[in-house]
Length: 256
Image 1 (cartoon, rainbow, N blue to C red):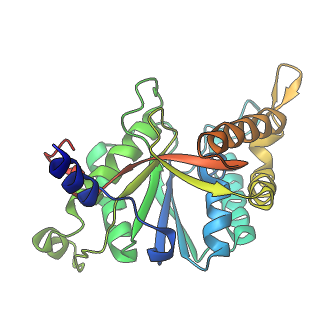
Image 2 (cartoon, helix red, strand yellow):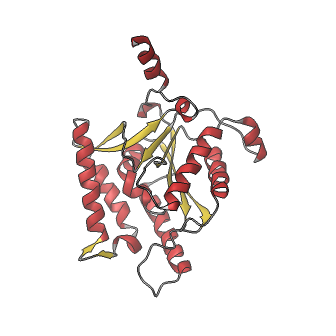
């Protein structure tokens, strides 16, 4: 039994940040990355890790203002996403050609996300958890499944050839955010949280909306700070963000 546990621990070992050179953060909407993992983005950037954002949809449904058109809000959210990415200092941001609302096909987003991820060839992918049982939003569900599709096919030479791409075998796993089953924590300093909140505030079309008498930014800030403290306590740290890490060997068949 001890030997089995040792083998499993070796095969599913979580990567050390010092061994990570390049990462991708995938967001269903323009502000999801900042909300779920903005502190981690700030820390990884500080460590000199190459960071890329991929935004799956244009966020056109993200308003309660009936006077705005879908096209207008999509344009605004694209601008905000790029400004926030610039503020965080990441290397690139790619926006996939899908409308917010989940009416595109799973196959279409699978292929588009696979092509973009394979072109960048990251060591680690951050994405929403596909196994979050209380997630009903189709953009989150389809984006998460597309990341699974991309991860399992990342090293397949014939699949890559189909899209005139080169396969890559350096993927060290996927770290899922918005999860109820965290097993991977990234400790943060207060400056990382402050950077996260400042980046989130750039998404003005979202954070300036009201929920009852509270503005959205107040509620999101409270959520981020409480989550960070709760995760930090679990790791005997002041602040942390949590993820469900899945190693490459666990991406197919093996339930380790």
